[in-house]
Image (cartoon, rainbow, N blue to C red; front, side, top):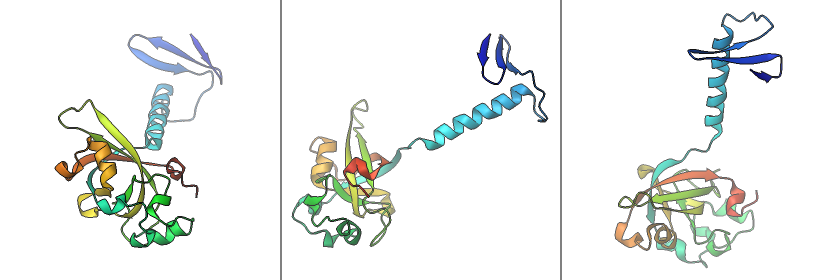
Length: 183
């Protein structure tokens, strides 16, 4: 017999798992039904708080590879400049920067969000590569796509950004601090 707090004990019967409590409940459910409901509620809560990776596409734009480029050319200019960043190269994750499908226009609340982008090579699915990238511009919402620097896509695809053009990736949003941004 395993003892738990609140004077509850768990008994294991080969055909049934149930709880025994010295206190009567006014619940319309039996103790085992109540336990199962609490168990599944706890599991659902844990799953809901996990970061889920979502499938997207990834393309590249060499404009994001030039460190001296002013942030004035991207949709997130005002947001990033208000935090002291002025050029692509001033961003902590450079060259891992670019457009994200969550950003749909100027000054979006998703400006400066941090993303873990994972690529799985279809011919070697046991091999994955990943990068941490900062969203600074409009992505490709029509294709649910990220559009990052060529250097970033080359890092993910083993130098095949130009050859592949667009690939499928998964993306998980992280904390801004994971990208070195602290606001």
